[in-house]
Length: 193
Image 1: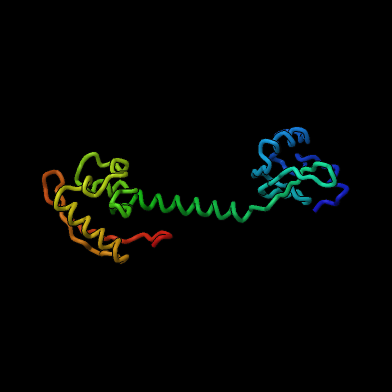
Image 2: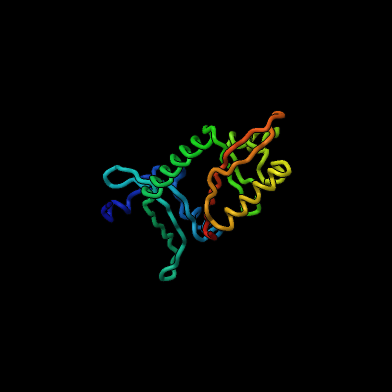
């Protein structure tokens, strides 16, 4: 770290290279009247010149009848790395789901479509065959008659038991022809089970 005498001579921009304006105690006091505890992300330049991402929290406090600006900076390097890994993982997952020839869809406990990949959109045999067309629609709205009833019945069983149903045979009409498909249904559990 910095020796105290050096620290006292430094400007905010010496420590935080992301600081865009000259620090002003009057401006900070006005800001704290609007927002008593100010939080932002920035950068901290360490004594060795290395910069690290930090979360900066500042507030006005009183001590011995005088007002002081208290600020702390917390290293968020690990959080940033974790966020980047999560973004990369989500992108890989999205690419896999979007590019597979297998229909993949998420249906909630009310049997409404939450999301669907392009191959899944072609599954119903109806037009339009874009995933966004199905968002919020029920299984009954997406599929016709007997297929909707059978599919909804299997979904309800999977949701009730929490167990997957593999290779469920179904038939759909596509372009005037009967097409046989095999569907696997797997529950995705949330905090409520």
